[in-house]
Length: 379
Picture (spheres, rainbow, N blue to C red):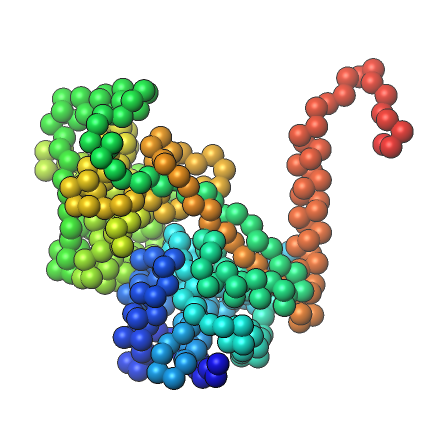
């Protein structure tokens, strides 16, 4: 098939094909709210100095078949600076899909266009799920790279909502939920649901941002509202998503004051549990578990199909959905090192570092020998 490739310098331009983008997104089953144009446009406006956005479009006639917004920047690794490409939205997008509907020839054309237009050492894509047409694109890029890596970034717990959720959960979770409800009732703390629109989202974000700022996330500067650029991104992104009817919030209020929240995005019957925080002085209430249960109750009433943790830590995740999960999704980080001299050098350095790290981990896992034990001949 003949494709027409087009480069644009941003998603916010007046001539960006918004309607064609929306049609393409609707045709990709793996697409998430973090592929929404409003989210990505807000991410574009929050780019750091030195980051450059280039958007590659592929057309088949009047039909958009690919939209790939790539951020180009110089990043330090192994004491040197290298040119690295990433998908727009990193690091605050929890899960993305590559909006791609290309055949093998189209994938080859895209690979060549990126190599010529954006010379780079590394193309790294985060938080992708398996399957779909994007898998073929990624496998093609891997085969054409000097070095590549397909690495798990996390395993996300998900919960399929069904009629069984109308019953009280069993075991230890039942006890924890009852205790949380009892403590909330004792201090007259009440759960509230919000479906903010474009007009009301600003006040809701101000309230929950104040909670995050007072929590450990604010203290450590790791929250989604930490720093002016992130606050700007969240205000604009959630403003656009709320206007599209995708934002859901559950709050715990005490005497009219919000003390805890969970912030989610609802699309295609799946609630992405994006962010939560609580005031430190109310830590003993167990509000996170209480609000997660409220997500499930809300989903039962409104016909949602899934509660999705959206993203968790790869190791030692403490997300409370692990207690109720009915499945999990593997999210991947793909790294593609180019055939340019800098790409070959960076790929070799990464392989050497990975081998040394693996050897150290293997050594750490081996039990220590007793003082009287002799080494074997191979040592």
